[in-house]
Amino acid sequence: MAIQIGDRAPEILGADQDGNEVRLSDFEGRKLALYFYPKDNTSGCTAEACSLRDGYGELQEAGYEVLGASRDNARSHQRFIAQHNLPFRLIADTEDTLQEQFGVRAEKSMYGRKYTGTLRTTFLIGEDGIVNGIIGPGEVNTKDHASQILKK
Image 1 (cartoon, rainbow, N blue to C red):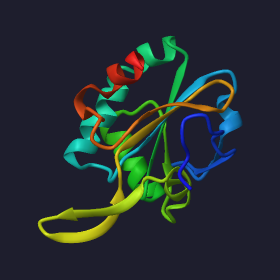
Image 2 (cartoon, helix red, strand yellow):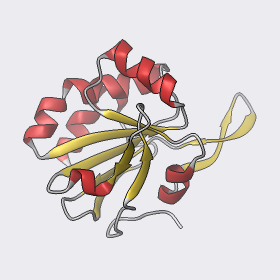
Image 3 (tube, helix red, strand yellow):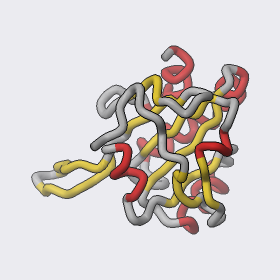
């Protein structure tokens, strides 16, 4: 069952690009923008990450921390962070555990080929660990995602 508005986010979120466990309680007292994206260093995912990087100061002023998650491994995340100077952590969800919990894995189609992929989705989690907003598939503006979060 996918996590919905009003649900509590799971305590254990996964491991970041350095292999450190990421827990919801790490963000206690702050809001969390947990964004799921398909793949490091693709055009849309890079635009989204750079929008969040560029708006990071404003997001922090509004009480948000940013955390990204994709199927990419830790090494890929390390390169992505270094290449684009990202100031936030990325979860290496290589087994799709977190994506399954949040319900962002689904059948997709590209050039007539069907495959299971990640639905670009952002969950806005309050200081209390409760999901209070979702920017769902088809709603994410990759080039202006930081502003979208701030307006929610």
